[in-house]
Figure 1: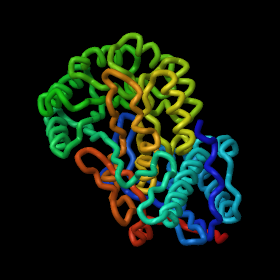
Figure 2 (figure 1 turned 135 degrees about the vertical axis):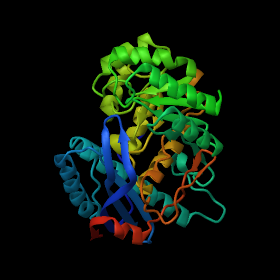
Figure 3 (figure 1 turned 90 degrees about the vertical axis):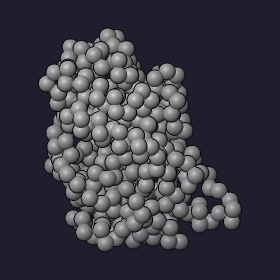
Length: 390
């Protein structure tokens, strides 16, 4: 089983926290609401040899002021502790709830990136590092899905066709605003007509339906060959999702319901989902994600990773976790052979804050060996920054 906490970091020369606010290119809309920017904390750790690691702490975009304030407090406490060589432990951060899990994800990502950088710096010429499954990062690529946003049938069909031309073989249609079942069916028929039978189609309802509506609509769209329907019911309705699974043939995925390792285990115990959409920034980073993967595999469920609309720093961390998962090939049938992860989100921001963006080539993203910040862009979107020396 993966460890509960990352190993103690190397001796650090500097720890820096950067609070950023990056606008979206256009307001981001889903069935739960609209938001215009992503606020997060970037955590930079630098060892005595100058090797650098970056992590990101991101909350639910609709987090309350109390929750965001709690994360701010934790980051201010963690920075000097890290610089002094003291690593916060998972149980203490987990007790803080969502802010603690976000802080742990940033810590986890920064230390993992630092260890990878230090390993590359000390490896003999021609040697490969072996920091878990992300060792072959430069050569490994991860399949990702394209998102088709709300819109009419023709707009959705055109967007889907363009995505397939770019090499995506998995498409996710955002749904939940349709007034009638026929409107959703029409959108999917147009999309299928545009892309043909081969691309995998997912439908994300964003928790907008009740049980009867979900059962009706999922049965109606089944002929469109749906890989899975994501979050058809409200996040809290685990029992409802379990009941829905008994009534429909299309696999059910849970996203907003999976806000922690405990929530994932509860959903699996209830038999509420065929797929768990896990956002490492939300559940606590690599170790927590891998424990969920192990529990899901034991229950015959699949884990698909997603982002919290982080900057490129957070996305790089999720790509490394996807590599560590070994792509999650655990099921037969409609979810096989290699699920695409929901990581193609950097383009939603006006800038991903990286000096070299993470490219998407033919529907796949390379696991980065190293990422560096575009410092002028970071300065542009910084709200606050501070550091501590080791």
